[in-house]
Length: 112
Ligand code: 5GP
Image (cartoon, rainbow, N blue to C red; front, side, top):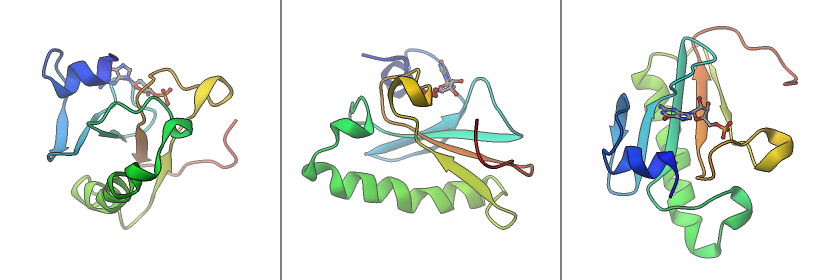
């Protein structure tokens, strides 16, 4: 179990911005921009590498939530970045799939 499951279970606090039966979104504790939200499936999937065909609907659901959460956070129109880090080379630190939704300022590209 990761820290994100503890957030899902309300065992540790988080600033939750969206929740339904399959997904949870909350503010990143160490924001890299004025808006930095993590959107996660409630299902414990460690990395993108662990996705199965049965997760197609769940992951599609998460992607359709992204613009809604971005709009609610006020960053949809000006723009934002979505990032999913996978394993060591990408710097994944929590082994529970999460979509970073980052915005509120201009972001440079490419990433480091
Ligand atoms: P990763 O590096 O795995 O792609 O992203 C993990 C993210 O989770 C980091 O941006 C980190 O700041 C965030 N994070 C780690 N622990 C907590 C926590 O306890 N609460 C919240 N809200 N975010 C966390």
